[in-house]
Picture 1: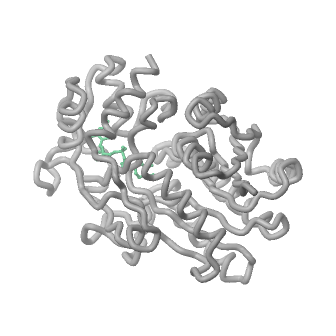
Picture 2: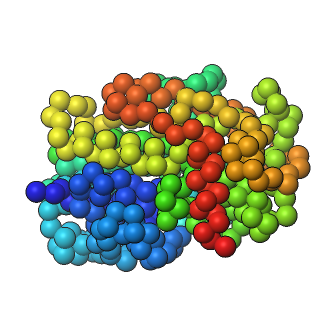
Length: 339
Ligand code: WQD
């Protein structure tokens, strides 16, 4: 029998790519999404890629009754992957309560319902933002958690603690916490990808919109950092590679009896790439020039961070495989479908 997985936020960027990989791996998927930052059309893209239309519930996970009704209508859900959350750092500083309500209530509701609904495991989307500015790179999972610099970041730290406390209380659930570095790119079919609303805040969607002529130029936020070329360094991870790690994590929780009840993994490539190197990679791999200029630093930016992914490589037998050039090509192919 196919096992059924609930994907909250499943029409979003990472949620949609993960739904594709779950379906490709033989799982049945039920998506719940309030469509606050995504579109129902994403379901068409998922169906076009996999030949299967996932079950879809339009609803808000901050409402526990909506979730209860979902479990009643879709019995037999064995695992949850929780993507439903607000994720814009700047907006979280302006609207902190929105972030605490959305991100924390959703998680608390899901955890509360898991034992009574017989759901065994939850994969939680966390972030490298919990490390703040690292003392050294690459950074592994044992590194200290630094004070959060935004309500968004704080919701990730608090969520990790909520999960740990709940599992340690003896609740019959397991969790795998995945700390993402910088997810970029799109599905190679160009049928799903990132759909930023308004002016993109993140580098790659801003870059592809600039290459497409939607934005005049890309501003590189600072070239006077203590890095080889002066621009900030991140670990850019292909979104399909990232999605595949969720399938492995889910399988591990559902099938293995001998694992810790809470496990944490960094998901990154282990390779630090500067903003200027990323622009070069895009131009080289697509042949399209990106008008850009150096601007001032962006407040709150981390200077450099990249992952030590060895724990995930060894324990999950998962490795980020896609090259940055291929990932940039996929981001560009997706951007061109949006015209
Ligand atoms: C990447 C680099 C910018 C835009 C992300 C998520 C955040 C959180 C942490 C999610 C930086 C530079 C950007 C531009 C630029 N993660 N940049 N010009 O800051 O690493 O944050 O990870 O859980 O939600 O956003 O990602 O894409 O914003 O920036 O020069 O127009 O690109 O300074 O060095 P960041 P980003």
